Image: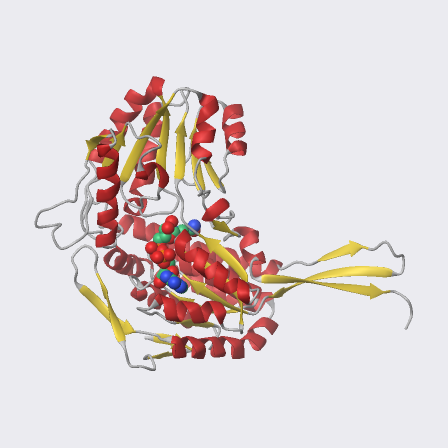
Length: 479
Ligand code: NAD
């Protein structure tokens, strides 16, 4: 169903599409398939609701978001199970994602009360400047399948806190998770028209309306750099504000003074995040030659013993990939690397057998001897393959890490604090983990530089993305 102006409804065309389990191919549900006319209707509803919602106090908006946070946590288990089935991630990780999604509701419930302005001294004695922050207006959001609940709340919560209304188009692979997320907000008392949902099997038509319709003042997109580029250029015609959370190609640097065992455990755990389908997963591991053997042994052992299977099965840490195109990409990256001299130390193939035949399972893989001429050195893999590159000169490794058009997350392992900070400062990336694989939280700004994106989500900065700045110059002369 679509959710427009506070009601669940079919698409105007009457069309539907189905959502399937990537581990089994089972159809999980059938949902309304929005077209351009539905997107227009949803935007009109958001426009109509904007006035009243934006005039509510921050405290009133906060109370609704706070209730949504409570409800999402109450529904954690059912949401996590749905996510495991629809998107494929192991249940333990799905629970973590639901809590992460709820964190944004709580964080922005709190921030809604802190939309502070400023006063600025004037050069004129008789004048004062007052700076106000006001909601930008109707926002639209286009979200990916890999984090099918948290990528919605990361956009909806700050939009609502700021006083904006919003229309969301979720990824076509995960509409059911989006529907249940919106149900939480509806049950929490979000007024009609403030949040609207238009799942669609045709992202181009609905997406384009959400990006170009003149009522939209702000477009927030999470997904691939390729699609982000199209959306940003379309939005530019209407001079709309954009936030772009795009692809990553994270370097993971292990210096010679790092603990190779701890670093290898970190690299394996980071690659298992959402079965390698996370924008912050490492995709180039640079390890100093002097500790490469010990590091690689532990990494191979850890990756080799990861159990693949349905996200709801016990002990599984790697679920299915999202579709056949993802399997094809794994094959292409492995074949290309091996043909150019890399060694496949573990994995390297699609998993076969009764448990796997109906899904898209790729064996956790480690490639050693990877070099700059290989595809995997250049492209985001988005699956459970760790490419290992040995380096000799610490002075060169930052340049190697920066040698990419991406700039989202990067990781540094060293026991030398000065080296860690110098390296963090020199890396052209938006988020740096120092001896740590999770530099994220609702409380910190998430986002990238270069072709990994524009703007930030989460933290105070995430709220500013939905606020315009207005200045008043006030004469003190008696009138
Ligand atoms: P995608 O770009 O294919 O799709 C993302 C969304 O865009 C989906 O809702 C899709 O339906 C829509 N879309 C596709 N074509 C469109 C078009 N022409 N016009 C409008 N909308 C369109 O990405 P994906 O495969 O769903 O997600 C994986 C990508 O997302 C990876 O590159 C990953 O790194 C990135 N990602 C980034 C972040 C981040 O915060 N930086 C977080 C998660 C995922």
